[in-house]
Length: 222
Image (cartoon, rainbow, N blue to C red):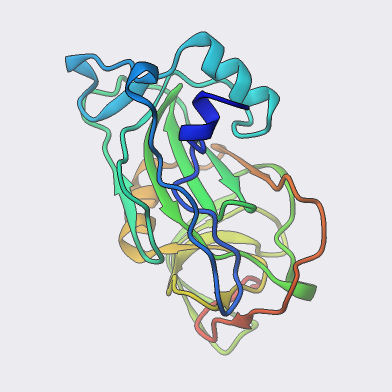
């Protein structure tokens, strides 16, 4: 965990918790000696085999990848990055790190997008595990929470837990869904297909330290 991970919290532009006073952790920085850049990569970093092994072993990645986006500054609530320039065709899959409050989307082994997220708090915990996208609903509204808008919904469970556009800001949480910035949700919706895999994980495996206010515009159940 020293050296490389002391300078880079891999695939974790932020270390946020859905609390009234969230903390923002170290930006995605690497020491110059650890960076492997190629002109054809266009704004991304190729990881060495040793870095990939360490990332998987220590829980920063759910599976091996080849490149991540080259992000120099902290991402804050409502921010995201998307860059699929020159990334070859491949299956789309997503990792959702609840501890670091970050979603990353990959095409094959290359990260093409990342965003700060909201997730479920208290009795509305976001489920952990590997899910396949069950349905795509562009203009969905909740049937449980007063017709709350859930734009660009990617449904993950039969009872309605989904990834969807949300008001991603400090102090809010969801009813179990993964809330992402609306503009990012639109890109994700266009890139993803039914059956694509979403891996949701959390290294803490412990209750949240304090309650969060639920976003009244967010809903999970249909």
